[in-house]
Image (cartoon, rainbow, N blue to C red; front, side, top):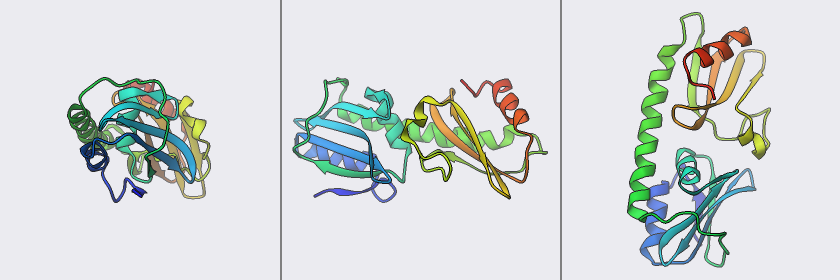
Amino acid sequence: MLTGTLKTFSLAGLIQICSGENSAGALDFSIKGKFCGRIGFESGNIVYADFIGMKGIEALRQISLLKEIEFLYNKDAEIGEKNIDVDTDFLIIDCTRHQDECTAYMNKLQNTFPGKYSVESIDIFEYDDPVFVALNLYHVHYFESFDSDKFRVVYLDKNINARIIIVFKGNIVTDYILIHLKDKGMLQ
C-alpha cells in the first residue's frame, strides 16, 4: 500500500512510481482526513485529475504545490470521465516548472509590500488555516484572519493561479492590503 504526504514524497516521484508499473487506479488525496482530490491512471498514464473543484491539468498543478496533503494509492478506484490526454512525462515536467515559477514568484512578492507592512512569511496556502478550514474555500478569492499578534491574508493570485497565504506581524488596516493586491494586479 502506497501512502504518505507530499512533504516526504514528491508528486513527480509518486507519478513515476504509479506510471512505471503500467498500473490502473488512483491516487486519492485528503486534507485532515477529508477527501479533496484524485489523480487517475490507466495503463500507467494519467487520464484524470480533480482537486476541490478544479479538473485536469489545472488540478494537477495545484496538487503539485501542496506539501501537507495526504495521499493513498487505491488500485481499485473508479475514476471519473477522462479529462487529461497529455503524455505523463510532459505532465511531470509541467508540474515541476509550475512549482519553480511559483517559488520564484513568492520570493519576489515579499518586495512588493511597502516597509510599513511587516511580512513574516509568504507561502502556498495548504487549506489548513486555523480559522478557515472548509475545503469549499476554493471558491473564495480573498479572506482574512487575525489573532493577537498575526494578521493572515489568503487570496487566489491570478499571476500564478495559486492560493497564497501572507502572514503579517502586528495589526494592519485591512483595506490597505486588499487595495495593494488589486493595484499590483495580483487579486482576481
